[in-house]
Length: 400
Image 1 (cartoon, rainbow, N blue to C red):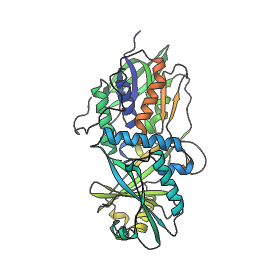
Image 2: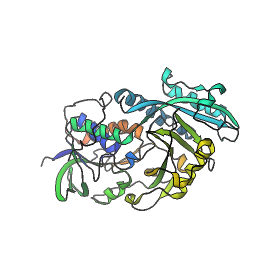
Image 3: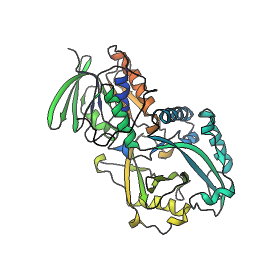
């Protein structure tokens, strides 16, 4: 019996949208099931950065950084209205864990991995320019480095990628809740509720891109499915009145020396993020009071104009969940590379995406389609995601 779709994707976050775009560009028929809105979960609660991941150099993730830098350049090229280059500043203080030599070495490696183009070079900011750094604390300040990365509106980017998928022929169902899947020979029979109506369909391949709900989806699949042990890690951001205008500041938390960003976001200043173990239903996620205090400590330390700011003066806050492989040690030291798990290596019909990074969604999606292609019928490609232009989408244009 022929399948109703070549691929069904569960989840319309950035990775689900990316897979839908890549699958549709490759000529496959694609259905996306999303329980809420496109980019309405973790994909709208990130640090809004498109970057190579400078801090991942410390843990030796050179290949991942190189991939991220390559994808950053593609996004700047293909989504110029959504992804903008932004100056980043790293101040080095007498009490900083990472000194001038280590930071300069890291930035040199970062520039080399990015191809040494003029846009990726860094510099040491002369003392004469320190007064123009948004009121940055200068007591015990020894040096300031400037380099370049990029910023985006994560939800708008996710919607743009999904719109590209729709224009290539993908179908999107919102208010669609995946319920179950049963393996039938060379396909999966799936059951889902769409706007309250129970529907079924036969699909050649099923992609689990449910983010924090990844195990919930796997629990509904009747087949021998192996799982990767994961931790859900909460990351909170706060927003304050006033705006940091000079760029994005890459700072060390005074409490534990973790990296924290202070950045302009629309007409406010955003500070983030935290790393807190999360247990429970992802739908119940909310910023914690201690996380807010932690982030206020950062901005109090580095920007005197915010030292009188209290918890009650935080304008808003939001929290997202990262999916990380379970392991000992700090969350900061764990790999951020996306993990792809398949039901059968030689002929996969079920593929699960664990974790992932906003910047590398496109390359992750390309790898998903490469792995599934051996199980799918041959189709005529419609495009190449490395060259597809992304444009902002009006807020009222979601498909049903």
